Image (tube, rainbow, N blue to C red; front, side, top):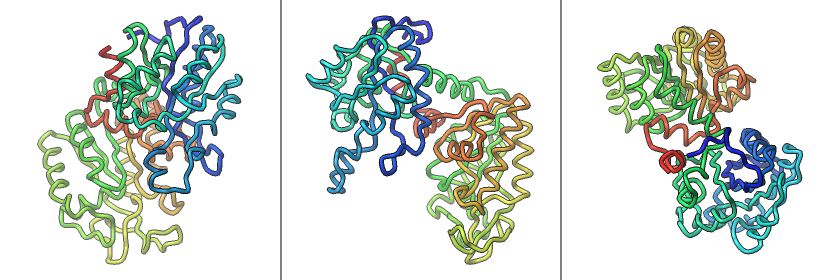
Amino acid sequence: MSTFSNYNFKDQTALIRVDFNVPIKNGTITDDTRIRAALPTIKKVLSDGGKVILMSHWGRPIKDMSKKPELTEADFSLSRIEDHLSNLLGVTVTFATNCIGTETSQKAADLKAGEVLLLENLRFHKEEEKGDAAFAENLSKLGDVYVNDAFGTAHRAHASTAIIANYFAADKKMFGLLMNSEVKAAEEVMHNSKKPFTAIIGGAKVSDKILIIENLLEKATDIIIGGGMAYTFFKAQGGVIGNSLCEEDRLDMALDLLKKADEKGVCIHLPSDSIIADKFAADAATSSAASTEIPAGWMGLDIGQMAINTFSKVIGDSKTILWNGPMGVFEMEQFQHGTKAIAEAVVAATANGAFSLVGGGDSVAAVNKFNFADKVSYVSTGGGAMLEFFEGKQLPGIAAIKNG
């Protein structure tokens, strides 16, 4: 494994796996965060006098087109980001209508120093998701050096994210700047965390977060639980939760988690009060209630002020903070106060010297919505990958480079 920053790409063709699976609506990119995150890696290669070939997936074209005949390849084509990428780089990006094949190989061979070639969606080929070795080998022939800068796909053992690394010598495969910073930030939290270490876990379902909570019981001193998943814990303990979200089949699991935390000396913090609503809607009537005394016909959609005060103090005392998941339905203005308040507490703790990592789609969306992204230590671009990292799983995209 080489170090990207110290590598000289002069006259080399860098085959870079990026994650350009960005939201596009009516042909317009609505959030280019992932594209911008990859720019430093691309620019480093170009400034060295190297050539860049970019490969990415977008959506699940084969699966979705089989279900919806009205969808065409144009609805999944990476050609839709070609102009935007050119503008961001200040370089005219050339587009290849396939990611393999004679025409693509010729375009790769014709590249000159300082030029960029964007390949068509990898997932138009079923071999990509299957991790097909022959497909990976074909891709590998396009470049001299393999750079993985797609942390968001690191948990997939796909051809372009893991298998391809087998076709490059150890000194010709490496993490890009984004991937390196993602891995470094995640390892800082999991392996070098300063205590107190507080994990803030939100979201709808306990079942989605069970593995991360269990793994964090070995690392964290405090775990704050918010969002819809909190009500499964309250119901398990005999609380009255009205129409709040609850996984009835996970009540024993919730009690088991609380028992394990107690045995390990980890403090689990549940929201003592909630903002409740008479329906799941932006125009719902609202009130507040103790989280264990929610009236019939009402549901908890955000944490209340007492919970905010308690959680904020715990966060303020922390030296390391991991935040994965919102505290409520923050997309609706009436129910965003809890998530915003927790974000403000994380920002304040960071300013006081804590290391804070925010990851997971909704948490990232929240810090971006409230313009706090530059006020925490690190915002991860990899939702599923980061979740699996904190569940303690080995990520194939990381292992392929580190162990190569």
